[in-house]
Amino acid sequence: MSLLATVATLLGGDDVRLVVEVRDGLSLTLKDIAATVAYDGRGQGASWMAELNVGPGASLVWAAEPFIVSDGAEAMRILRATLADGAGLRLDETVVLGRHGERGGRVHSHTLVQTAEAPLLVEDVVYQGAGEDQRFIRAGARSISTRLAFGTQTLVPAPDELVMELACGGQLARTMHTRDVRGPTRPSLIVDGIRQADTRGSEMPVGEQVHTDAAPAYAEGAVG
Image 1 (tube, rainbow, N blue to C red):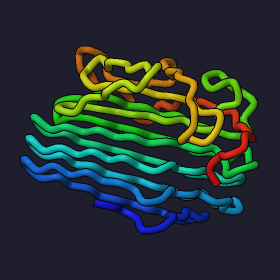
Image 2 (image 1 turned 90 degrees about the vertical axis):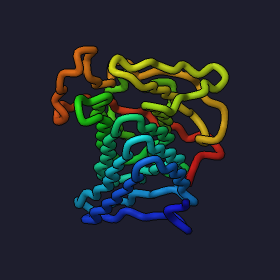
Image 3 (image 1 turned 180 degrees about the vertical axis):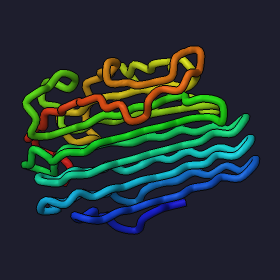
């Protein structure tokens, strides 16, 4: 199933909400046809939220196209997924800081994956193209790709890709790109930027924020 037939745009003041429900025993594969681009809102932010509910024995695979944050854009990107018993979830997503020749704006990315009993992954990260604090992303990275798998879904590691096993179940792989997101990648893992539940399944504070400022690149062939 495809979500978009053309490029999606986020302008200042936009509030996009998407709800996906996969009922008991069914399987669904979502594919984006084109990227989502957040533009300069002239002082107004924009928000994009996806709520995923995967029923018992069901499976959801979502291969998302890049989320591009243009110069001056302020975007909030929220993804919340709830898995029932025996469910599976696999997500591929990429955040790109700026179109070609841009440094990129600011995006606050919040991800929560949980079951009825406990959270599996809680991550709250800010990527900012113009930031000076480059603690996590270095060497001119301008895009960050994340792959997640939970339940009955698993990740098949790409060459030179590091896959992290999460404490409460699930897998996470993250790579940073200095050129086009379809080009060569330099594998890296943002360990300090991950907020996840501990092995006891205790609730972690969803609102706790981790700042991760990303440096852009100006290489030829970049998205935009």
